[in-house]
View (cartoon, rainbow, N blue to C red):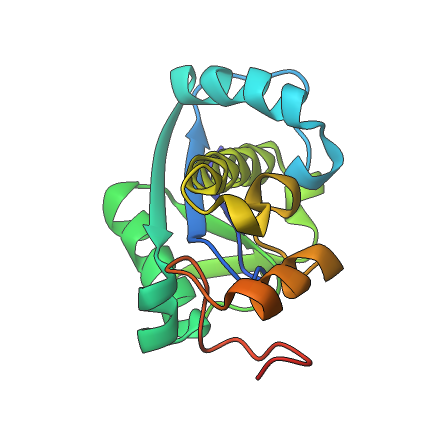
Length: 179
């Protein structure tokens, strides 16, 4: 059987925080893997060390500054290239339908719910993203990042209107009612 590296990202859509990408080649079957969005935070945290212990993996993060400077698509392409450089596989499968110009990448919509390696990558990316933004929420308390993880909720947009942007915000993202 061909070696498969599953790839997924977390933090593509938020107004704040890093974009995190992960690639995973599983060495052993792990029970309970599925799309990180359908798992509870507790379950993702339980699976995270199991994935780390039973796989080859690479996690890469792009800061809000990098996203604003280079653009989201460029960061996603650079992330795919970094995963290819760090993990050797015959097949690289990225969740979604775009390769961002990177050769040697296959795509599948909703692969994070169908392919264990992509599910594992989804979990590593989501947990890494959420841990970082929760840590930052202790510095930027007025934004409530621990609740919305940087996404454009009503409460988050109200906090931006009241306090302005902080270092974690992506300035290139257009926010209705603010920009």
